Image (cartoon, rainbow, N blue to C red; front, side, top):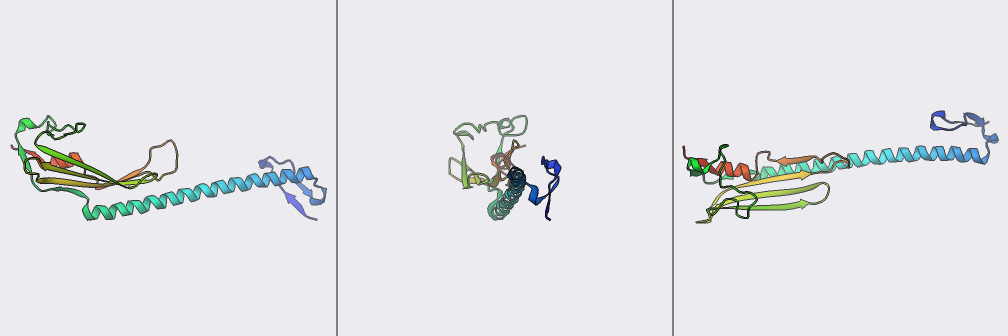
Length: 183
């Protein structure tokens, strides 16, 4: 005689009965209970698979960022500009820098910003390229290249993770490298 053992914690009222005494209603309950177990197992496997694949994609993009960063990432200053002390604020930063304006470095210098997306969506990856030029002779004073990845995590109420290379790059780092006090 075949016996079916059902776990009572799953809400089934059948503990152990001979197979011949089970009626259709009881068989449906058993089938439904087993179906819930399969669904829960499938959801768990699917979420683990998505987490694993998302982590792989993030790792692949982070490695690609490291390779690109090694080629041309970072700050390169080609010419330093010495300015009088009155051109700097209390924090040692040039006082004519206005990032929100169309001409952020005033009438004498040009800040060229370029953002190139390599991938959009989740995760996304892009490159920032900043260049500072002197307007009078169009000479390139310096440039900064930075690569960034954002996202690729499990959806949730938290902020997405990010990775940037190099850490010390961007327009403010470039500007600090180019413009120096005379004293």
